[in-house]
Image 1 (cartoon, rainbow, N blue to C red):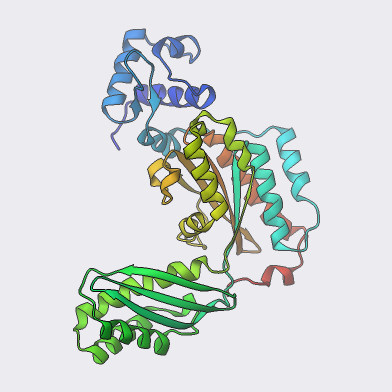
Image 2: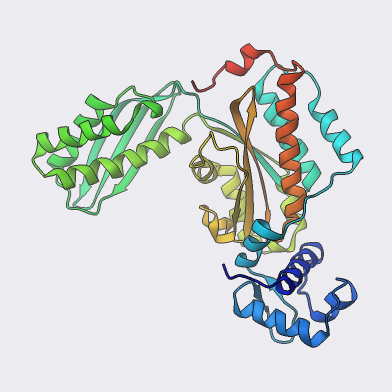
Length: 365
C-alpha cells in the first residue's frame, strides 16, 4: 500500500463511510456538505482523482462520484476504521441473549449466530471444529492418467467416505500410485491430523522412494500434494457449520443479480466450499480475520466480505463465528459485535454458566 497523506486518508474514510451508509457513488459536493470536510471542491476532486489513480477508489462511470475498491476497503479496515461504541440497549440485548445457562457448546454457538445476525443485519455463520478423534482408517488410490489420480479416504470417528482428485506436476505411473496407497496405509492410517508431523512425512517420502525407486524429489512432491489433500479432508470431516439470516442478503443491492444470488445461496446451502475455506484458518488463532472480495477462497464471494473469529471458552477453542455481507459492510459495527460476543462467551466460564465437563467434551487435546 502507498503512504497516504492525512488529507487523502480523511477523504478516503469519508467516502467509504458514506458509501457504506448510502450505497451510491460519493462526490465532492456531498463531502463538502455532509462530510464536514473543510477543503475546496477542486482540492477534494483532485485528491479523489489521485486516490483513484492509486487504486483506492473507482469511478463507476463518467461524471459519477467514486466508490471504494477492494484496496480501499482493505486500507480502511487496517488503518482507518473507528471503534464502534455499542449503545447500552445493544449491550444489554447481547448479554440477555447469551446469559441463559447453557449446558452445551452447540447451544452457545447457535445463540451467538442468531445474535450476530440480528445485531449486524448480515448473514452469520458458526463453525463447530472437527473432533480430534477423527482419523482416516483406510486409504485407496486409483490411477487416472499421467498427471492425475484419485485418493479415497474412509474415515473413522464419523461415517464418511471422501474422494479427492489430485493433479500432479510430475509424471505418474500406475505402480507409483499403488505404492503411494501402500505408504499412506502403513504410515498414517488411524493417525489424527495433529500426529502427522514432519518426522512422519519424511518417513513416508523415504518409504515411497524405497518402494518405487522414483527418486527423492518425486517422492517428496507426491507425498506433499497428497498430504495437502488429506489435511483439507480431515479439516472438513466433522466440522459443522450453521447459518443464520441468509435472507438478509436480499436487502442489499449488491445481491440484486438473481443468478449470482442463487449461486451464493446454493454455496451456503451446500456448505462444503465455505467449510473448506474457513477450515484453513488456524483454530488457535485469536485474531479476527477479514477477507474482502477476491481475498475470499470461495469464488462466488468475490463481491462479499467474510469476517471470522475463533471463539474460546476456558482457554479452549469451542468453534468460530463469522459474518458474510457485501464489501460495503459496516465494518466498525461488525468488528465490535464479534468482539463483544467473544468477550461475553469468555465471561460464561467465569460465572459458571457452563460446566467444565461439557467444555472438554469433543475438544481437541
